[in-house]
Image 1 (cartoon, one colour):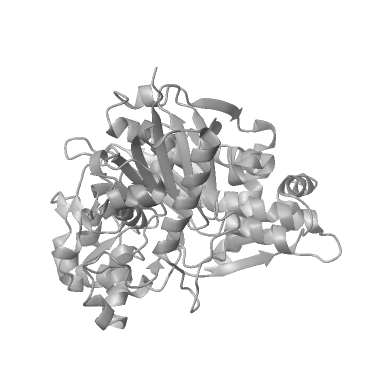
Image 2 (cartoon, rainbow, N blue to C red):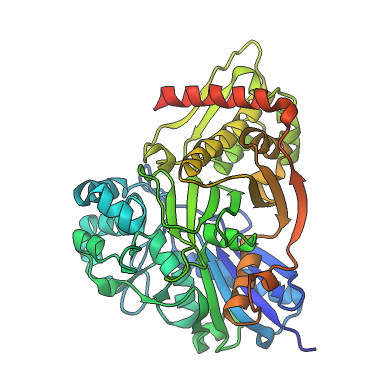
Length: 496
C-alpha cells in the first residue's frame, strides 16, 4: 500500500516544530524543531515581546528538511498539511505580503491600556455578550497600538493575521484565517455570528484588513509552486487545518466535547475546557474563544485559563537556583521539602500582565523565606507549588462558570514531566490527571487528516492516542495540600 503522511507544523515562541504522522497507523514517524536553543524574543522596552515572522518560515524549513531526511518520506506522499501556532500574535503585511514590522507576540503587554479603554468605552455588557471577553491584550488591541504609535506603518497594512495565518500565507501565497483564530484576536462577534464590526469601528479599523474566512477543517489553501521549490514539498498539497496552540493542544488530546479539559504547562500554563453553551466570566479573568470544532449550529467554546508565569519560572529557577543539574535532579531535590515548602510561598506572576489578575502586573515574589532553615529544595518546591496554585486559582473561576473539573488530560511534557507538579495539581484540585503520548504538532497533523477527509471523525483520528499514566488525587495528604494552597492565596491577596 502506498504510504500516506500528514505534515504538522507548530509555530511556538521558542521554536517551530515539524512532525510527520503516518496517516494509516496514526503514529509519528519523525519530528524536529528549530532552533535547538530557544528562539530570541526582542524586548525593546519593558513589557514588549516581538519576533521576526520570517524567522518562523526559516525554522519551519529547517525542521521539515530534517524530518524528511530522517523518515525517507517523499514529498508526494504528504497528503495534507496543518499549522498550530502561538495565539494572540499580530503580523502586519503589505500588499506584497511582506511583514511591515516584527510580530507582536502573545506575552507582549503594551496593548493592555487599549483593550481596557475599549472595555470601558463600549461597556462590559456589549463586549462580554458579543466577544465573550474584554478586548484586553489581544490582537485587536495590539493593532490599535500600532495605529496610534506607528501611523505611517499602519497606513501600509494590507492584511493583519495571526502567526499561523502567516505561515499558511508563506506556504500558499493566499491570505486567509478562521473563526477560531478571529475569536482569539477579539475580531469575532458571537451574537451576530460575523466579524466584530462594532469593535473595528471603535478602533477605526477597515474591515478589509481582515483576511478571508475559511472553515477550520477544510482545504484552506494549497502549497504554491514557489513554496514547494523552497521547502521541498509538492505543489498543490492541501493545507486543511489550523488552530491556536491551546485549542490545538485540546484537539491533540481529543478534547472536543462539553465538560472535557486539557492542560499544558510550557513557558506559559493553560487549562482549557470545552463549553456547549455561550458563557463568559463577568470579570473576563479567563477567556472564551471558538473551539476548533465550533460551528454556528453547534456551540463549542474553549474556556482558556492562561498563566504566563509557569514553565518560565521553573526554567529561571533551574538557571539561577540549581545551575549545573538537570531538570529530573531538580525535581528530586524539590521532593525533599515537605508539602507547603515549610512556609515558603512563591507567587509566579513575573512574565507580564496576568489575565487571571484582571491584567495586573504584580511580578514574582518569594515570601516566608527563613535563612536559618530553608534551602534550595524549599525554593524549588515552592516554585512548582506556586505554579500549581496559580492553576487552581484560575480553575476556581472556571468552576464558577459551571465547568465541572474532574479529569485533566495532558501530554507528558514540560511541567507534567515533574512528579511533584503532577501530584500537587491532583492533590489540590481533586481532579484525576491522565497523561498521553502526543504533542501539538502531532495532534495538528491528525487535524489535517480530518480536514482532508482521510479520517471520518475525531474518534477515528485519535484511535491510536496512547494513555501513558493516570495520577489520582492523594486523599491521605489532601488537608496538607489545601492548607498550602490557602497560605498561597493569602500571600497573593497581600500582593494584589
